[in-house]
Image (cartoon, rainbow, N blue to C red; front, side, top):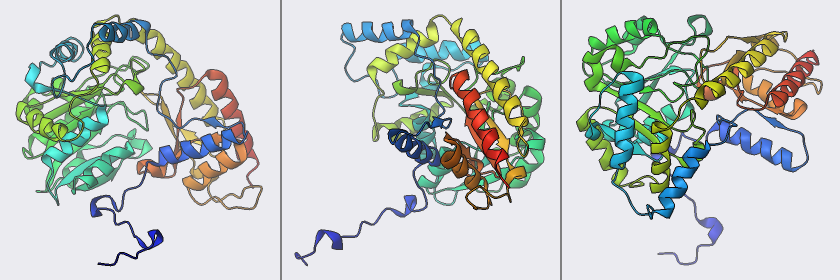
Length: 410
């Protein structure tokens, strides 16, 4: 044993399962933008997927009352009975899906729900089908579980939605899950009943394949879009669907960290095993607040949705007015996913040629002080994502800067 090693001689060896995974590109861009702001740069950050509204007062009041009542201890492993009952009622009332309390799980954010599900079900070599563009954590969580993400590109012409023929062609004997997100982060694309139907018909033919649906943005939809979740649309598949949701986006509770899901009893039990060795129960205070969110008044959701739609229309119109950019109108969420192929190949004022969407986003940050996220971070190029969960004045200024920056390209 060599006891004379210097600190610099010690080489850290990460686990193989995370060797190809890095910190989220969204977080990296946000950190760089914040650093520039601290230097005095007037950076507008349109990268974070976080509502700019505050948590409603009645929800905060419920948290305060819970603390005053001494609800500051450990709770049941995967959710208090009160919160599970509120979730059960929400699923029945809003989605037309009935779950028993032991078919519901609560975790520290929807990301932990996804992690629990993948860790509880995947073995090395298993496959998970993920349409792109996709929320970056889907693929990384699958890889941490030592399975293989199967990425399927879904183009703008198809509304960034997975098509039945694509799904059928991707399924193999190793396929365990398909992950769908509607409305989508990053594209804002939504699956209507008629969009889901052909996909569910494919899954009916492959009983070994389960479906995870991420419904996090269900309350943020526009233009009369009718949200539907697959377990309600096809009850025959309910026993192999995990319906994931949370309070983060609709109720502006990102920091409260509560996600939940409904699914088959055996799956929920297996997920609890994973959670028991990770975080154990979610925050007792956050759970009490979430009961108030789900059981309390919902009228404010209409006003907030209208505000997001005004911002969506502002951003889509502004981007489409810029030569070289092409932005599809999203059905929901608070993101635009705009094509930027028309500016690639051009040269910046400093002489750098823009080869990729990453180059274009770096140019916007450095030269226009606007932080956005390249489509490559979400598995589809050449695009870039804007989060319009910001003040309209800030969005207008950002659009002006983007237009000016594009006009300066040679």
